[in-house]
Length: 220
Ligand code: DX5
Ligand code: ZN
Image 1 (tube, protein in one colour):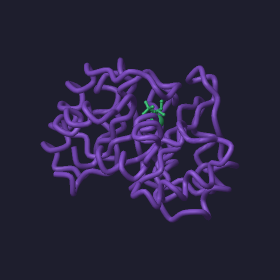
Image 2 (cartoon, protein in one colour; image 1 turned 120 degrees about the vertical axis):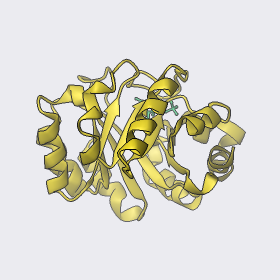
Image 3 (cartoon, protein in one colour; image 1 turned 180 degrees about the horizontal axis):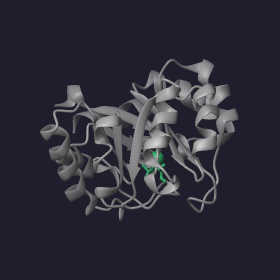
Image 4 (cartoon, protein in one colour; image 1 turned 60 degrees about the vertical axis):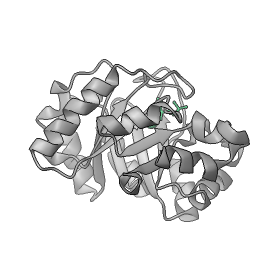
């Protein structure tokens, strides 16, 4: 099973005074994706980084930039994040007046499309779009901050989405994001997630041994 599992460390928990070095270190430590949390202080109560920072990080690594847009409005920024070097652009359906239009804007940039559900957001918000997206990001914390506690109630939703994807014979990835640690990563995988996002566990556990922590999440 671990062969299918991808680890996407969230740089929200990285040292923002040296983000470049941190991204290079994550690549060396075996990250599959680099999870970049973009927050606008409007869709979520926190403010982080924008396209300019991603543009500076882009030349440092070939790793996939898994960009999680917790912003609204979102459509007017898709091209900026695409030009900055995002590979997967994930948005929240509640952040746009027209989900199909936002999906098409991302596809027009030839980027992979991710759609994200907050813990209380219902599957119905994305069910009819499953065929059009490459990744479903299931949030297991309320978006806005790293270091929060995993919300196990989202595992039920994860299982349902996995069933839908399998029934429709889709190759859509299921990414789980928020409060993932060495224990709950097991049930997250069992529920059907194949991409695990982690910030605090990867950067804090085992004195910040990135390679060790990524390895444990992957193989547990
Ligand atoms: C929260 C972000 C998550 C967060 C994960 O809004 O979307 O990606 O950074 O960090 P941890 O693993 O510490 O919950
Ligand atoms: Zn995230």
